[in-house]
Amino acid sequence: MLIDVHCHLFTKKVLTQGLTRLENYLTQLEKVSIPASKIAPEDFLKFSDTAFDFANKAVQLTPLEMYEDMRSGYGEDLIIVPLMVDFSYTFLAPKDKVLENKKSLLSTMKKASKKSREKVMNDWLNELAVSVEKKLDTYDRSVVLLDFFKNSYEEQIKDLSLLKSQLGDKVFPFFSIDPRRNEEFEQGILGEIKKYVGKDKIFAGLKLYTSLGYSPTHPVLYDDSESESVYAYCEKHEIPITVHASLEGFSHMLDKNYVEGDIYYAPAGQAVPADDVFEDGVVSYKNNLYGMAFSDLTRERLLTLNHPTLWEKVLEKYPNLKLNLAHFGGILQMTKLVNGNKTGFYAGHIINMMKKYKNVYTDMACLYNFSGEEGYMDKIYECVYAPLPEELKDRVMFGSDYYMLCLFNTTLDDYITAFKSAFGSEFIRISEVNSLRFLFG
Image 1 (spheres, rainbow, N blue to C red):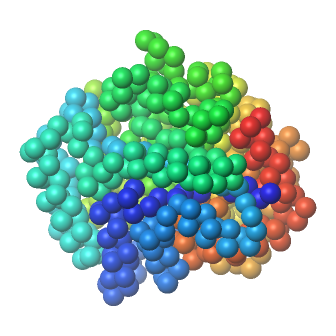
Image 2 (image 1 turned 90 degrees about the vertical axis):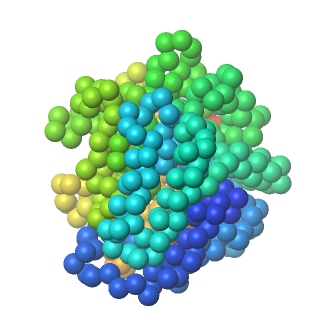
């Protein structure tokens, strides 16, 4: 049976009122004129009728309805692996770990609302800033999660627990939790992981999205001297972990944030402790909300907090960790690699890590037709997949990134058709055999 090893089922309750405005934002954005000179070539996000599906699914469907939508799109029965994402500190960091005035985020938002190119985004940010201002004066920063992602963590657990009870062995969710929340739980985040993740538990694995503001080598994940680390526990119990491995995606949007552990420091070309480069470990970012393309903002944070070099450091200490470097570097990097562009480093880096570590996998989620060329997936198959050694082909998996695909003018039907056409008999390998091995050994 087809296995989609990478999808998301975020609902209205998860995204809450801040993101439910996205549908209205997308609708109005079509009416806004943005000078072509202001749009960087890398700004690949295309707003269209298909993109509206993103908002509609986010605010209208239940997880069970999303599963049925996927089944209809694929035209066959399937097993899904929905990935949680813990957004708790996407906009705010723990109070005792941020060495700046508590109004700095509000200031950033107000600057953005004055200088940003899109009027609709201006209004939306301004409205959000007012909401934040009221809460900052009332609550401790460490517990304010903003209306933007209020109770997202709890809601996702509820949604996916219910879906598991409804679908049984047709769904194997992955749990997500931010390591900076360790002190919020009596047994820390490892206690939460032990409660929810493992054989005969609701969740089959763990999802980490470090560009939301933390390092892959955060002490709680990597080396907690007072107790067992998350990686040590997952390695011992063969719990699979999926991590974002692409220069496209999402990130936190703070000008500065405190980082425990290593960051990727571009001038040195290597992973170094954050407090070796930035005073007290408070990392500053050049690209911020005001005056910058969103893709530039996220790319800087994805490089700083999620560069493959950081995951290599994790694997050096935990060589048997079962790790899925999702997205195979992403479609932009993949396109560069296929065309011989040396800046397309990410997929090649993942391949080298797969050669070195026997439990490193990758998935091909959200490799949509960025170039618009007919047969684009055939080129990926011929240039990237076909030359791989057989033992590496055993660790490449199929995924969609549903429902994010809607943002890129891609339907599930088109997506799976491209894969089946390009991969032929190998499609069963990547969409069934390899995924079962990753999930269950």
